[in-house]
Amino acid sequence: MTENDLKISLAAWSLHREFFAGEVDQMGMLEACAELGIGGFELVNTFFPSPQYFYLRRMKRRADELGVELLLVMCDGEGDLAHADEAKRLQAARNHRKWVDVAQVLGCHCIRCNIRGDESDPDAMRERAAEGLRHVLEYAAGSGISIALENHGGLSSDPRWLRSLVETVDDPQLGTLPDFGNFPPEVDIYEAVELLAPGAKAMSAKCYDFGDDGEETKIDFARMIEIVRAAGYTGYVGIEFEGERLPEREGIAAAKALLERLI
Image (cartoon, rainbow, N blue to C red; front, side, top):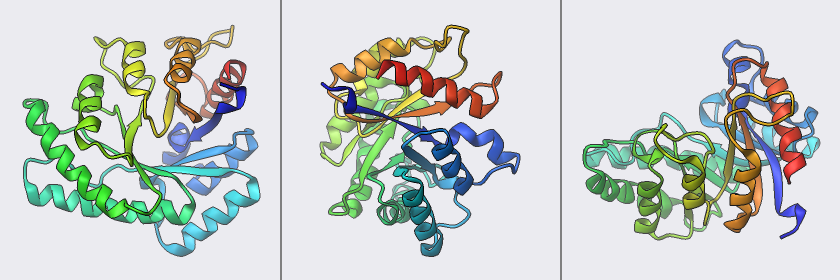
């Protein structure tokens, strides 16, 4: 593999404190991404003031002006694709359709869906989740938009279960979005990312704080990048800063410096 197989992107969520304080909107986050010298940007659906066509074209035009690639839309709050009630599963699938359309207009390659659900019956939930996802995938067929599943709470943070769900659906449009940090304490995060990285559609470099040596204080980034490369993943590794000690932009800059050194 060459050095250029991995590139650095910025997840909009990294600036969520500024967003909720009213200090920046998603367009401003895109501009901050460019100012920080980061070439890819990952959007969050709940940060859109409106998913209407005029706004989307303005966002795409601004990204092109800044030389930033719009990569994916992280979707929250659109219903439970694994709900025990079939009608609610179908409604959740329909709710995700507009984000497939949005991603296509923006030139993204992917949307991230959540699969959390009821942990009491993993096998039944896998079947329900597979059904809900197939409805989304059927809509997305031919669009060029992939569906990514992140370890994002509930059963999705069990890497073996999440991988088994992807294998059950067995669709090349469906893959994972491994997050370095979204695992419960009992899970070995390095083994988990190694399990989820093959076939990943995107990669989230969760980070919290950095020491005087520039290293992330909770996660061995060098080891993670080795795992990512060994899995054959190429493309963007997205900075997702969630620390509280550093200001968000300072944390993002520290993460960028570390990733640049590693890749």
